[in-house]
Amino acid sequence: MFKRKPREQDPLRDTKVPELPAQCQPELTRGEKVLASAQEDNTGVWIVLTTYRILTMAENGDVQVNREWHEVDTGSWDPDTFTLSASWIDSVRGLQWQLRKVTGPGRIPEVFRERVSASVILVREVNLGSKRTARITIRKVLATRELIDQVILGPATHGVDPELTAATEEIRQELRGQAGLSPV
Image 1: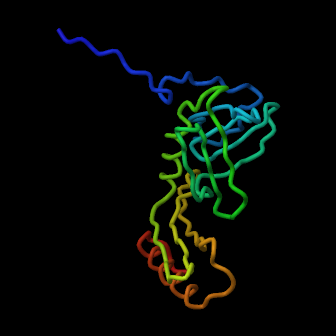
Image 2 (image 1 turned 90 degrees about the horizontal axis):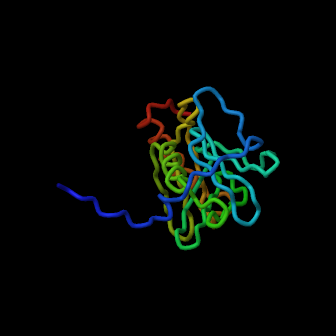
Image 3 (image 1 turned 120 degrees about the vertical axis):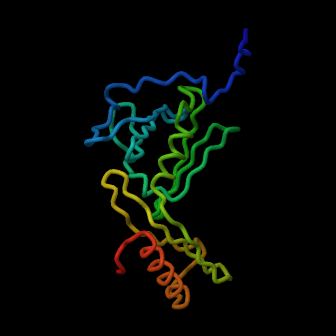
């Protein structure tokens, strides 16, 4: 007869899934579901991850952030501080949420990663040295399955750089072709 070893405590797995308050239930579109939610420690906002977007909602239900997954540029989960960070493709200031004390993170870290990854189809970097960089991506709008391209210039890239513009456009057209998109 086999005996199972007792499971070791894993704070990410053993956190009880928090009940999202009724006033923080987002309006969902056809096919959209809430996949994870947690309440932020310091501000009390609710982070709600759905199949198509990331939302933050005040305790009274007011929506503060409503972004589709293809709008997330980068994100990270720090297990030491229980902090989720997200930055956006349009350079709007990134956000951080600490998810330790009130509800714990629940499934937020894994759902966040999975949803962002699901929206990324192809990625290429252009690096011409001297902080002349760009990233070109083909992303999927998860709600419609439409493919779009994005060009994100490096943080130190300023002004008009004809060489970087030409290299970026060449890669952009190449990726569009690989994804079956028409040239633009």
